[in-house]
Length: 230
Ligand SMILES: C[S@@+](CC[C@H](N)C(=O)[O-])C[C@H]1O[C@@H](n2cnc3c(N)ncnc32)[C@H](O)[C@@H]1O
Image (cartoon, rainbow, N blue to C red):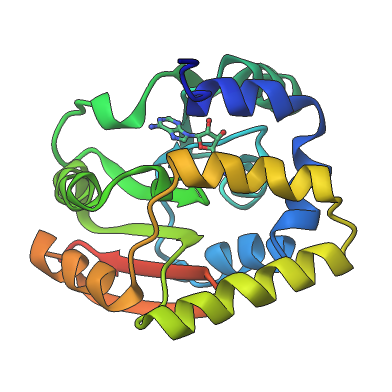
């Protein structure tokens, strides 16, 4: 029996046309990235150390670098091809480091980060692994540090979830997603993606010790959540 394609193999394979594909297959993708940054605290809060998980080809990384040019920015992804593109797009900038690794295996020092951020990547973790990740991220953050991510979430009921999925497909096809592209994403989703509902994820933030927990934006499955380490 053939093994299903791994997450790294899938993103290696589509890395050459990732941005065009994601703009078709995630309606309001650019707005979502902009909103992730908009809901970070205003000055005088300025992160000195940032960790981005699942950076892909660097669409969010570039925005982070633009907004916080003096911060140390650690970028993590399991796919060698996307990391290579991210590196090319960001250039050899001081303070930017690239790590090709599985973010589940990260073992980092306590209380040394000001911002842990991710876009459409943490749904690759099953529920228990998401909970573990939230606890780990809380430990890595300094006081007033922020964890925020945008991601695909389930609905609170099967009917709401089904409506999210149906409308997602309709909107993506209106944006130009082809049959082939759609079925490729869906095959990947079937083997590699785990969508958890919003209420559960907010509770996991709470259980991990975060405060100021909120969901500042949502469109169908795509949801932004954030919390602060008190
Ligand atoms: C849908 S892409 C998102 C890329 C980018 N953040 C964006 O918003 O366009 C998901 C990324 O997460 C990475 N990823 C998924 N699971 C991972 C894991 N366990 N460890 C590290 N990277 C992972 C994939 O390789 C891929 O580049």
